[in-house]
Image: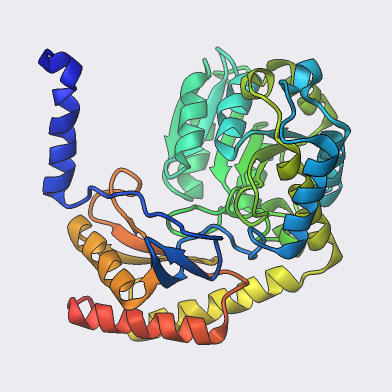
Length: 395
């Protein structure tokens, strides 16, 4: 067989990753995702899950998923626009709209497909996207798929954002500012009130990706718009169902006219099979739980503040985090991966993250504390961080 069919060029690329010390085998979860999980056969404190509220294995969600399967079956059987829309899908979207205090919601298969489907559907040739330079990869992909021009502004730099707006105020038909609500690698929050003020001043639309704010910020996790009390002033809000909600999928919330348009032009919605009933049943139950009480988000924030203060007290560099996402910035890429491995040996799973996910020289382990962690587990994790940090001369 020729070298072409052996894919030797990919072997070379993999070898380069190994030489750089950043090649990773995928960790294997041997059971449910929880505060303590069995990963690669070892029981460890799990600090790398997006399961912010502990819902992924919650008894109420599991029961709701099973009941949905018993009534509706294992799959929807078609895309939403043919005959894949069950009454349970419509109930989910209505409940999410009520939760978000928006006119309407449409659910996509993932948060990524929300961005790759919505951005090209709402901007076109002759339009301009103004995007924060640290926006998530799915936003970047959505921008590339659109026919609009794209300009970036320095991360959370409102002076630079206004410069871009001022220079391009009359050059385009429509202008759209896009930002993450919570930035997933650093845990800082977008300066949304100032962004909205600038958008209104320069007659722009606003688009916020609330993947890491859904179920985290705002009343019972209603998101960044609710956190800053900006209802009615943000045009497009993206949320996720696969992180704090504990299941899978993403959604777009906004005016009914937007949702009607996406039902006709949102390509992932049009060309992917609808969510299986088990997912929908579990999502509905999770949202009901959030609407009943703030106990889950209250516990999440109590734990996050406690753990963050402990790490900072030891002298770890946690960057500019303002949320339960707490990076421990190491800098050197190979060393960050070694630190992650050392933590795992001690009983903590905190995944190393390096370029291209974060800029070169800012490699880190990213931790996410959940509402399900106990103080004893967090104290033990802090001890393991301390031991590993001293051993590797990070502290």
